Each structure stands twice: as structure tokens, then as C-alpha cells.
Length: 131
Image (cartoon, rainbow, N blue to C red; front, side, top):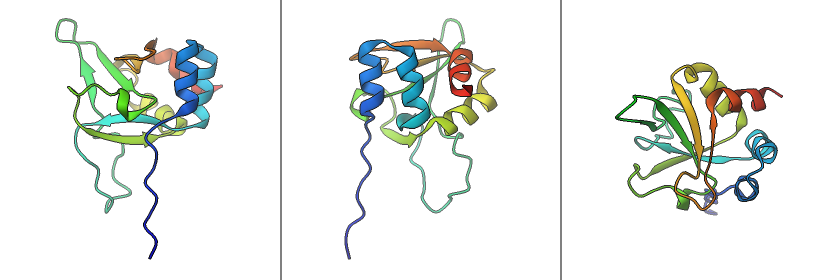
């Protein structure tokens, strides 16, 4: 029996858009390709209908209490200080996640530790995903 191919935890399209600091290309990459989302704990494959947003790791600034969603073009760009678990998602998931939790999320950071970090308000990400 052939082994199941492991997914690549990298989005070349998002990486290129971030390198160019081009928000239109970032929006296109988010809508049409995958991206990496940090998780608090690993997902179990035996619960496909489980809430896919419950385990997303969010950053809360200790001084302001503001919440940020961190997304990555490559799992290798995720800082070691974050939990080691990740998931691949696409634009529809992000749209649904922000529609559900966007009021709590102030900012979305992309590749926060580099090589080409970018940030945008959650409302702006929702707007570009609605196009």
C-alpha cells in the first residue's frame, strides 16, 4: 500500500506576495492557496466535523489585551516560542473564522518573525476576502 503524501506546509504564492509587500497579491494568495495557522494542540483526524477554529492559537498583548491572529507562508517561519502544532487552511476558512471571531481580533500578522512580515487590520482582511 502506498504511503499517503504529506502536505507541504508552505505557500509559495503567499511567500512571494509578502516578499513584495503587495496586499493585492496577499489577498489573492489567501483566497486561492493555502496558508499555515498555528494551533494550541494537535487536531485529531477522527473528528472531521469538530469546530476547526477552536484550537487556533491567538496572541493577546499583555499590556493592551488586543488579540492578533498569526498566519504564516511557511511552517518554518513560525517562531519556536509558539506551540509546535500547525494546520493548513484556505481563504474560505479564514473568511468564516474572521466572520465568527473578527470582533475580538484586532490585527492579522503574516510571517511575524520574517522574512517579510506584514500586518493588516482584521477588518481589512475580511474586506479583501469578500471581493
